[in-house]
Image 1 (spheres, rainbow over the protein chains, first blue to last red):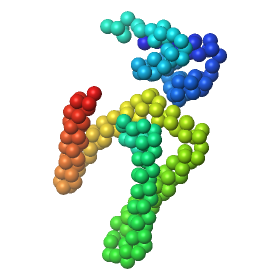
Image 2: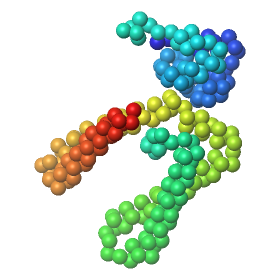
Image 3: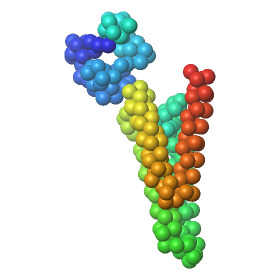
Image 4: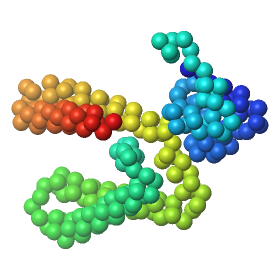
Length: 68
Length: 153
């Protein structure tokens, strides 16, 4: 699974710390999410989607192998 | 480890109350231990090793209790520190890291006890039996936890 959190954050000119504060998570979580090392829970994914005003599936992109 | 063990199903305020009680208890037990050490233990016929062990445990509990209480006090007085601690507490990645670390520690302990049993078997059968019982307790608590969490989740 990949995501475009990094691009969305940069488009809004936010630092990782600012995004972390908005999402009520630690900066390390934002870093791990952006690097794809950590997959967000459904709840956090929803919070991220609401924050960016998008749908979850617009932010989190599933690979073929994720779905099989 | 303490964070991981106290993380299960508690809100931040509940955790703070729990830890306040825990650290106050540690301070009290440590203080009583130290008083007993200076009034009773030093004059007793306990071996120097046992006396040192007693002093170490008491002093350790007292110091841990005082440090813990002062950290919680700091959280109550600094809004920024409290906000940071709350975020860290509620952070799902942090919880995953804690859970995984606890799981790893459990696995390491499990195999370390087996290894210790193999080493101790020809030397000290009583100690080997104690370790075997510990291993059985570990496995039983795993099986019971699985049953309980299987129903809860």
